[in-house]
Image (cartoon, rainbow, N blue to C red; front, side, top):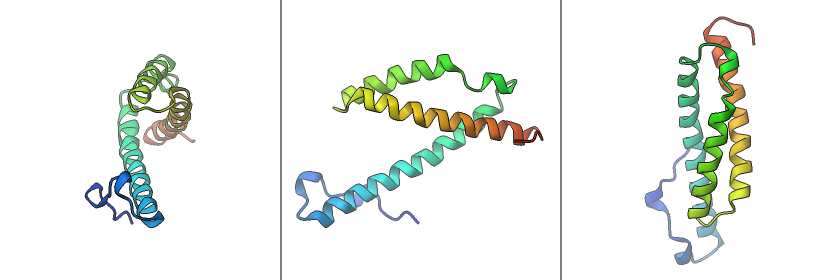
Length: 110
């Protein structure tokens, strides 16, 4: 169960010990996981608008999305190459999940 909230976070510069640092990292990791779960809801919702399985991967959408993620990474002071690679992997997995969901909602065998 995820209990930590952003209200509980001590700013990194105010951490007094490694425990404070670890609690902050754990809270942020938990939030990332919650957000990935919410993202899955949108991925599944998108499958309702896909006319066929072949339309799911949408490589042009993924390419455009990665351009945005690179820009956001740069703005956040992160390595855009790493973030693009990370989101390419995330996208690949979510596309696979959307295909499985698309098949399941249409009674097709996965």
